[in-house]
Length: 134
Length: 134
Image (cartoon, rainbow over all chains, first blue to last red; front, side, top):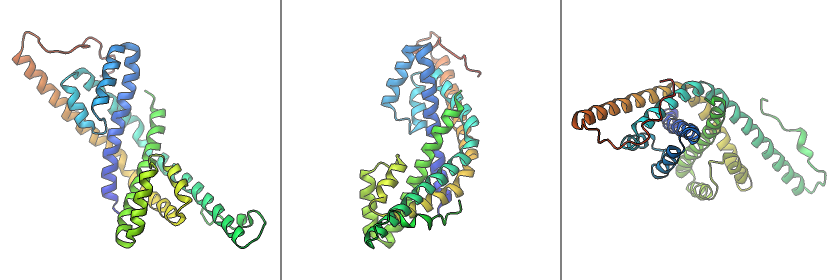
């Protein structure tokens, strides 16, 4: 399993995602304190894909240095406040989602079994499930 | 700062992203072991956005249960192997990137200062500023 490569790519994606969240927050604040600049930011973000966060910030530097500084500060704050909780949150989400999908799969398989063996009893295999370590 | 909301949204995004990475890995493996199924998986992924990972998996369940199980297993492995390293990786990436952008900003500012002392810099909105704590 190529953990290292996946970790690197995921980290880059996360960095861009937190930059996006920072821009979203600042945009909300601006729409109250400085609507004109909120509109400007919206327009700018339409023309510069934030997925490429470094290019996005470099382009903005030519037009509004102050806003760049604000985005840098907010995304670092977000990173410090949010990142540490993610591993546990995401792992438990995935385990729960996997459990749901496996259960649903088993139900479908037993339904297929019962109809193909011509037993009319609904859901006979419902008890023989949970080999999962839940 | 709405850390809780951002953390939740980021966790959901990460779950989908790891599902995407699992599908990518499996697709690579299949292209060697079972090219026909690799093509099928590519076609399926064209028509079902993986950003909605739960819907993606539910839809696949109707067509290829075995592949669903494989995706579930791989994304859980990826989550277990990758997530714990992300907070440190992303935080240090962001700090480094912020440092670079701040340096580049300072360089530009001092260049502007030295070349145009009669303030021709076109920069509206410079008055609305740092209520942020930095």
